[in-house]
Length: 143
Image 1 (cartoon, rainbow, N blue to C red):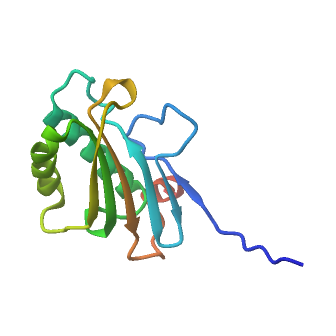
Image 2 (image 1 turned 180 degrees about the vertical axis):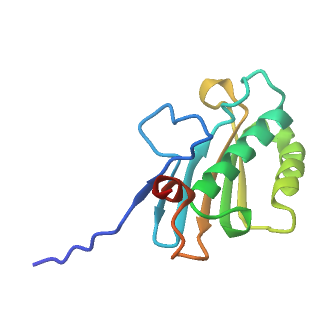
């Protein structure tokens, strides 16, 4: 006989971020861990310059983290997919502006193309430091 353990997974929806276009959640929280899905800068058009797209994606990430009950200081790992490695310096500058002195593990992966013609997609893993505090999305439902 095999024992199975059931892990509680909570799907996170950030109220101020456009809903995902596919069959996935903005993020999933399990225990102290938050896994943020790949975030495209959908609040700007694909024609926006790389800096504007990067800032839009980072703002959306910030809103998703807040909905999950954490913020930039709790980010443990970031993977950024960018179209064109020549954009790396601009990405690094925008990223440093948002994260300030916090320096999580990070990978910047150059890719030939991204969905809808965007130039950047960001995926995060964070650790909630206060597991007793419910995610922002849940706190909104309780009030």
